[in-house]
Length: 299
Image (cartoon, rainbow, N blue to C red):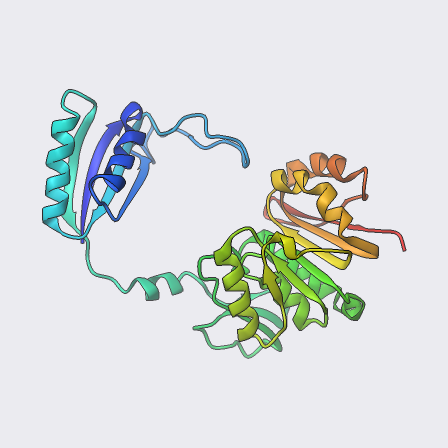
């Protein structure tokens, strides 16, 4: 494979990447700040849930991947002719060294200790000797490897309340991703577990991971969620959590628990206010700038 590296000013970047993918058959096109790590580096992306202030950096580097050198050279010639007189130039045309991409990806995920004896272990790793309870996980295309603070906090909450798990007769993992929270609840004794997500790849991953761990998890789209649950888990982000307040709270049974994560510390107030008409949220855990919030409905 061959990389074509272009330097472009902000006004042409969006059209350039569209052209590379849709007209010139690039396998991928990535955009980065051409001034990164230098004195002119610029922040581009805004707050979660809000649009970026601009579509590209003032000087962007566009890296397009092609199947062979001939395709990359043809694309470069086409772009230079089409954008003649505009702020665009070729920086490099180089071969990409062959790599075992599966092994490279797998090397990024190591076993994660949630508690001293409860571990998340990728399917390609040996189980650590200290692990008495494990989740064997292959995230596939779905979010949720156990490495992010938001996921770790949810898993810690489940493990820390394991004594209550027999009373979780119905459990809902809303926005399940890889299914890791649903699986953890099942391993600790919860029952009637529904895992829902708007992403079909996440639903598939949750089903595969549940089967690999020998637990029963019913995974499907959001329409699967119905009625009340003794435990409702939602590890998403603050903006969708705020919008989902009436939906999630309606699913919490009498004496049931609501556990929310994906929230930055500074967002605690807005979540508390959004849920106040339904349930009283408290901060139950903190990890690296993120928080976990919890509420329990009166019996």
